[in-house]
Image (cartoon, rainbow, N blue to C red; front, top):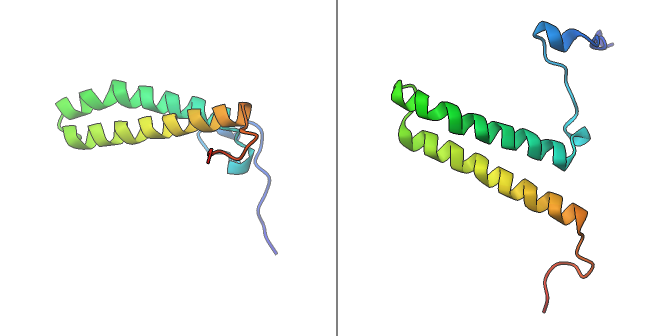
Length: 91
C-alpha cells in the first residue's frame, strides 16, 4: 500500500517541486521554456567563463545544444500548426 499524498496547491511556492507529467506539457510550453533557458545561458555563461567556473568550450557546447533544442521545438510546433497532408517527402 502506498502512503503517497497529493501535493498541496502552495507547495511550489515554499521551495518544493510539484511534479507535472511530461505528457501534459505542450510543444509551445516546452518551446517557451527552452527559449528562456537559452537566453539564461547566453547571459550567465560568459560570466561563469570569466570566473573560471566553466570552460569557454563547454559553455559554447551547452549553448549550442540548447539552441538545437529550440530549433527542433520550433520545427515541431510549425508541423503541429501546419501538418503535411502527404506524409512529408515528395518522391
